[in-house]
Image 1 (cartoon, rainbow, N blue to C red):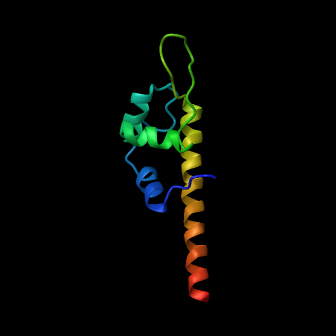
Image 2 (image 1 turned 135 degrees about the horizontal axis):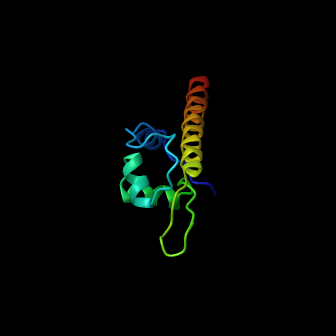
Length: 100
């Protein structure tokens, strides 16, 4: 069963002040990604466990995992999609309750 984030959770994550512009091409560590996105480590881990985190690559052995610029942009697109989907689901629920 797929876990869905609430609209409020998606809103909180998708409306953050980003510290690093999306056109930045650097590969980020998890710590740098969290700083860039304004996430805490707990929020990041929650997203990853829920299947909503960015793709993480081990690009160079020994330097630890990295999030590429493309993975970061894809994550933003995915979060935007989740927000639209959650909004549509909320509208469907409101329409169903107004018909009753």
